[in-house]
Length: 229
Image (tube, rainbow, N blue to C red; front, side, top):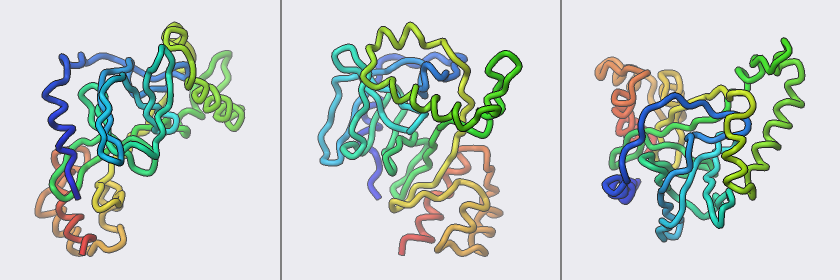
């Protein structure tokens, strides 16, 4: 599996650093990042596109960009990887996963999406939880997010702080040979092609810490050795 080396080079030219601050996506601004950021896209054909600013929709994992003052959704069939600010992403199944770590054999990636289970418990005002009309709420919410496409950027910015905060679900995976292996003890051990005894021995030997990216990255080469014959 090829590493995303061109993206590592991009990072050398990223302008400035992103200041850590509290940010929560809202139904009026369903994006991973508070702002659209300068970045670049590598297409599936190998072309490099740099002249735009990007953000990730947490509604469907797609990549949005700004052109002629409007928010647009990129054709997900055409892109391979992307850089958004100082974040690196890879397109897996039409969704943008952030690359947290990588080796020559694969990578540790993360998908951030809306936690609809938690959303169903959110108080939307007047003492009513969104679970009271969950099906209608989710449908209208997704329709509203989809309407971000073709919206004038200035108009969207004005409404950015409106609506309820969106609870997030962050899922990590080992991405090897086009396969997504959940980066959890059960997910790795039970994945087809992985020897359970060998997995348990590896976990113990490396003292894998399941909440630490540095530790999870040690699983990449192990998983590769197990499922790529």
